[in-house]
Length: 135
Image 1 (cartoon, helix red, strand yellow):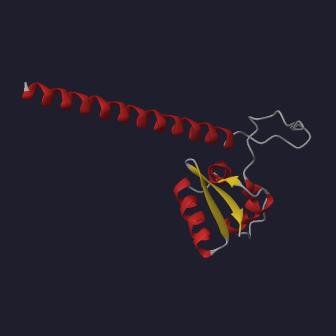
Image 2 (cartoon, rainbow, N blue to C red):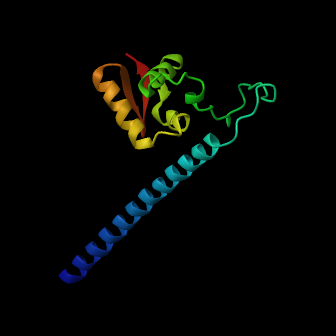
Image 3 (cartoon, rainbow, N blue to C red):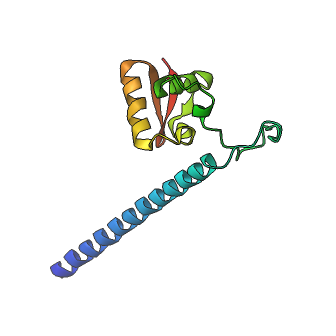
């Protein structure tokens, strides 16, 4: 009887960890799909200004154009990030990734963290991302 209880505990623990792993896998796949959609939106060719329709409040799928093309070449990525955050306080950190397509996500994360450590930006945790504010 004792071995049967031990066996049931092992089976139960195995099932629990299997479910946990499946949940983690689903979250990772959803994150990858979101990142893939952002990258695809960032790589779309830009339309000329006369062809661009006016965006309304209901346009939720409109992806922002990369900021680097709007800024002069002499500005650094830090200055561009600060300009974006100043222009839109409370911007999610994940919303900046497609705007800086030429810089890797990991480099941007590290740069934003360094800026927050220096007191240039303020980061507030929200879910799996951060809200960014000028300091």
